[in-house]
Length: 125
Image (cartoon, rainbow, N blue to C red; front, side):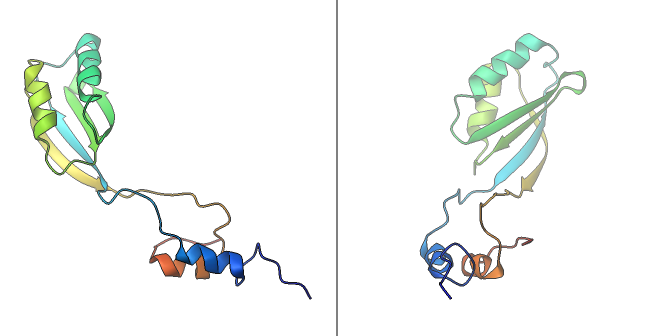
């Protein structure tokens, strides 16, 4: 019987356990701001342009009717975000924060031996 190097328990699985996982050490956090003066698409465009220049800002979600901006980011300090909004004449009031879990798709990860060396919490089919 020949050894299949593409399945669990073989050299392929063992080599995967020695390779480091690549990702951000800082999880994504969603911070919701209330911005009383934000109520039209031109202000949304200005905010997108300005906050898009800040490293670690992942995405923006707008609710103009409720004057809410959700910033998904990997920042320890929101100073650059609040300063940019104040600079635009749109002073924010933080409403809340929630850390988000990142999900990864790893092709061919199909056995617990591949998950265990990386101390991951995943469901294996």
